[in-house]
Length: 139
Image (cartoon, rainbow, N blue to C red; front, side, top):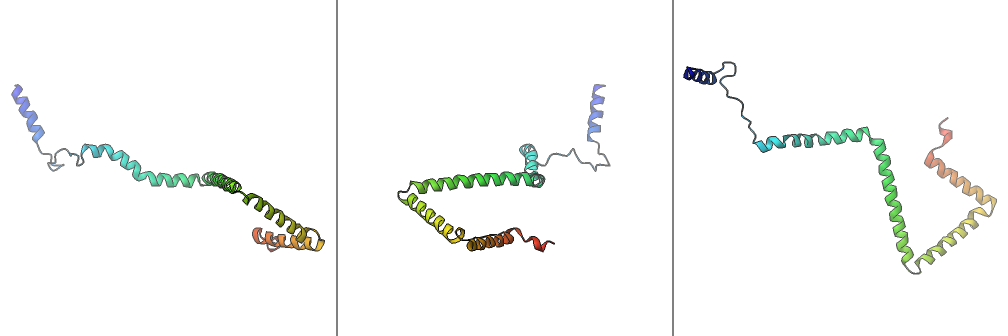
């Protein structure tokens, strides 16, 4: 009796199902190591989309942070360059003399007389209108 049950099981296992066309259980076409790496490959392939969405969502805060970092680096580099210039003998006093000379010339040229002060203010207002815009054009 046991033999007849075993033969029945073998016959049912070897029978062909007309719906599947006699296909065996689908064997994986990829080796096991590729199947294990598939989730990693999926994440890496979707990474540009994730990054793009992240930058789209947080564009303004990231830009502000980036500007602070760039400003900090610029200040550090400027101080380093000024420190290097101050380390060169005679160069620092020469720059101080040039600065004092320019300051004296600016005071003499623009600040001593009222007419030249008016000229300075008109030049400043023209520059401000070019940079900021003219309020008269808006009305």
